[in-house]
Image (cartoon, rainbow, N blue to C red; front, side):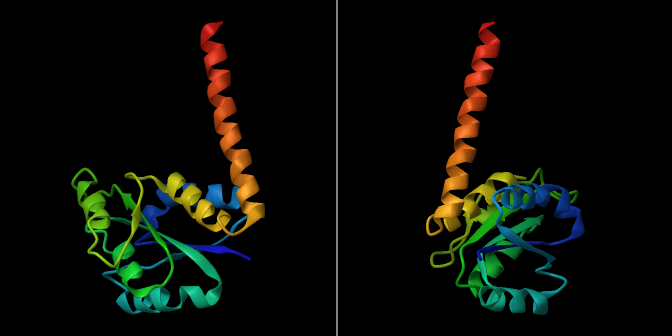
Length: 161
């Protein structure tokens, strides 16, 4: 069974990160959700990063606001693909600090980065990564994408009426 680990720096990130949780559950992908603060619980961060793959996690989605060190630090410790979600927090500089902190990783420590508050796309990307090796998940993604296409076609029909 494929599992996606979804971590965030604090409970205040949950309204954004719920979108990843929901879309992954829609693809019948198990999720493990936790609060792991890069700055307040560094020991937990190290344990999570080093051991997530031993618990059956295939992909990690890490959401963080402000300085947003969580995705990069987890990526430095884990052999798994990490998707960073910059979160616009109350102490943020319009979210740019989070975007750049996650986006500007040094060579050798990649973090796939989605848009500000883009947890929905992080969930879809995690499912696509898993779907590359799991036909059941891939088939669900194909149905999802067809649904997106049909929504646009229906919207075009509505406009022409």
